[in-house]
Structure formats: structure tokens, C-alpha cells
Length: 196
Image (cartoon, rainbow, N blue to C red; front, top):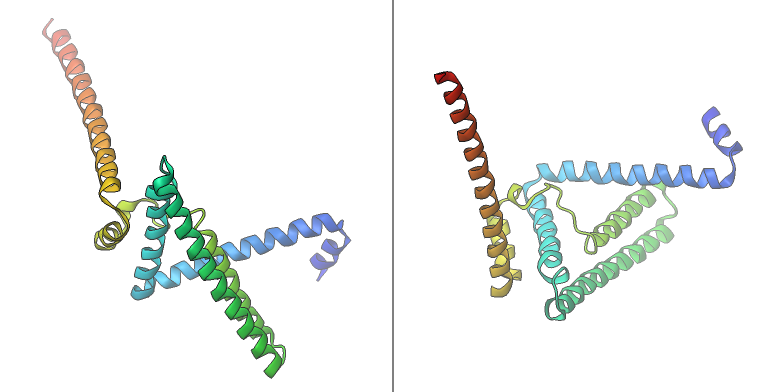
């Protein structure tokens, strides 16, 4: 109780910053808990990974490309998905209001529907700034990755991806050959000093 009184004594701008920080942390924590729970439920985990990879591939091969041929359909697809999610969010809000008016205001119902709305809106934000929860594509189930790639990518995009993989492999080979030559040089240097 003393903490609340101390916070109320602070200027309103500081109170707003503290409230926003607590809200942001709570939102992050709820999303973290949700991801941990859904990882244990296989069906939901597969669907979540499918959505993450879809968002990633749309940004990687459509939005972040040079030229309007792929850029425009990529953003149109993103706008379609976000508007679809917003309509779903509006339906949830309408349902929430109808339930609140019929049975009265209940804090548990408000928290439940509020949590759903906040999660849905943060999920929609992921269409503009996709992030992979497992870090890299290699950490995902290869079957899911291949299904999404086949659904989304055309031949041009697949060639771009393959050429990028070839460049990465060539640079890895160059690095390894440089390391081998350095080790040979060191070994020959030690043998020549050991012979004397």
C-alpha cells in the first residue's frame, strides 16, 4: 500500500511511464508464458510455427526483395491478413460487450477477453515485424518448413535461396581452407625449428 501511495505522489508523466513499463512487462510475460504452454501442446505448437514461418517467408522473399513484382503482392497479403485479424478482433470485442451487458461487468471476463484482444493485436503486429521464436530456420521441423516453402515460393525465389545457400557454403569452405593452410604453416614452422 505504501508503494502505491509513493507512486501517486510522483508527477503524472512518471506515473504514466511506470504504468506503461509495467504493462509492457506484463504483456511480454504473458506472451512468454503462452509460448511455453503452447509448446507443450503439439497441435497448437505446429500451427504457431506454421504462422511464424509463413510470416518470415513472406517478408524474406516478397516484401524484402528488389522490384515491385514481389513487393506488392507481399504487402497486399500482409494487409489482407491484418485486416482479417482486425475483423476477428472486432467480433471478439462485440461478443465481449454483449456478454458484459447481459450478465453484468465481471473482472474475470474482462481480463479474459482483454487478454485475448491484446494477444491478437500483438500477433497482428508480427505480420509487419516477423520474428522467429526459435531463432533460425534450421531449428524448425523440416517438414513444416518444406510445406510452407512449397506453398509460398515460386521457382525464382527458390533459385535465389539456393544461390544464397551456395554462397554461404563457399564462404564456409574458404574459411576452412584458410584455417587448414594456417595450421599447415604453423605445423611446418614447428617442424623446421624442431629439426634444428
